[in-house]
Image 1 (cartoon, one colour):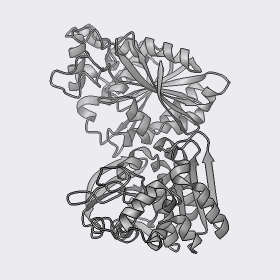
Image 2 (spheres, chains in turn yellow, purple):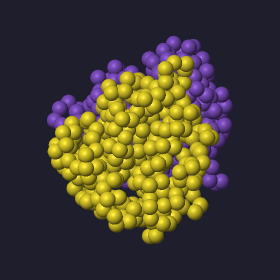
Image 3 (tube, rainbow over the protein chains, first blue to last red):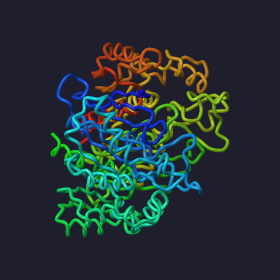
Length: 280
Length: 280
């Protein structure tokens, strides 16, 4: 692990780290905000994971997410991983499209070649990166929350549903709720996993809930003016699945807000307050 | 005036506008945050001007400045202009350096050709843009504050000192305090204004104070780990000038903080709270 950058910010340190990943077989970068409570001698601090959306890496939320003030106030560590493997030998979308390949790992372990070798973002986020965070930072992995945006909201929901004992809180901004029913998800899941419906269902939050996966509660903020709302995100499908399953879904629809970081940053503090109430 | 972009954010609208400037002779863009208090029927709202630093345009602070939550809470309009004229026919630094020409207007009215024609940022900020803001938004120009970063901190200080009746509050992040004594300022002021010491003194906050210019109080936040602190920024010179003049300078030196938006965003809320206490 090599620390690439470090800035003092909001009463903590915003850092960027690089390491060689055993899962992706590539160098990977992530950002981590360490509130002073996690730097000084004291109790290890809870960790909130932020999974980014299509085209993003750690920098988008780190620069525009407006999360540090709330994390410093609550003493939360925030980790923002990349969204795909990158670098020499990593295959991309054959047409260079933004919604598959680089920047679009969809938090799956690919089974279809040529993607299966490097596109192992599920195992990277679920197994490898938590180990590194536990080793290098004063982090209490007994208290974890997870959130994400769009494709990263899909990632947060599916990873939390798959690991209900690990995360005390899960939330999302404009998540892709039913990837097997929308064009982004169909293209990506099909490209990484092939046509086996059983495999696809393992990466679809609504299908997972229908098949019995459970978390006690979910918080979602969604812009009502988000151009992807009906075609790609489908929060109504999540509401339907949660209602049937008895999952306590808080789905806040915000008039006028779109899919951008101007939306995310507007509700970051309330989401982090919600996580903090469950983690601290 | 043409609105280029508009995002719902933090209970207001973040907008970007473009217009043909009579002062610079070029199209100019600026961003404006309009809290709902300024959109709905009601009293016109106070305006805070944010002047950006070298290489920036409206986007840097608009994306990374973390000002909207505080502006929405206080009902403040925030205007972020560009830092220079741009476009066809606008001369740049002959070597393409970052500290002169495009992105580096230094908030002066240039007198040296080929810069005198377009580089009229002082008149643009002091005269033209306030007229447009008054015409197009529900703004109370009887209640204005001004702040800025680095070169923009220099701009905020000099514009406030030149117009003490217009601004009820002036603050800065890591301002260039004595441009006639530092390399950035000497290059820029010399390039735009020539070698006349009298002209240079009109754009140097410390010289202006020594010559009798007054504001009642100034707030400055400065990172102690800012690599430009001693060579370019010189807050001690501002402290000396303010002490002699009886200006109430609050100069907060922050351990570990550098010159970046990670620093600016950390103290944006406290600066805006300070402005709001004087404007609302």
